[in-house]
Image (cartoon, rainbow, N blue to C red; front, side):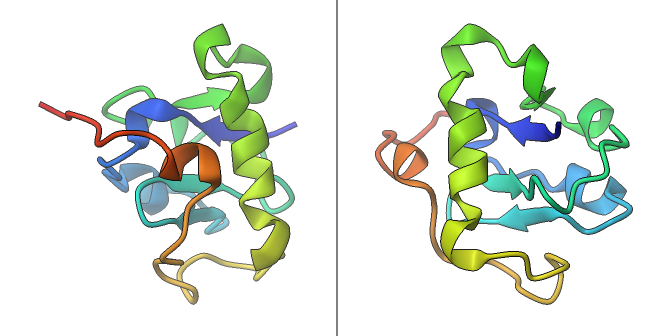
Length: 107
């Protein structure tokens, strides 16, 4: 079980969650953030600090964002498990689901 980041994060990337994460498992893509499913310790520290309520426990993801679970997991297929997001920085890539989205109005 893990937490996932859904659509409200796309094109916002506030990063308050990154600062709260005690295990540095929230990685930055080009347009969104992603929680590494194997590195996350399910502490839940990230969820309450997200200003747009984009973070959900995997069993609590709203139906309209159900595909974001797979997007968060699949994002790490090529990246693997680096053992910490800080040393990676912005990966410059996104899952195809996120890449295909039109620009998100955050206002």
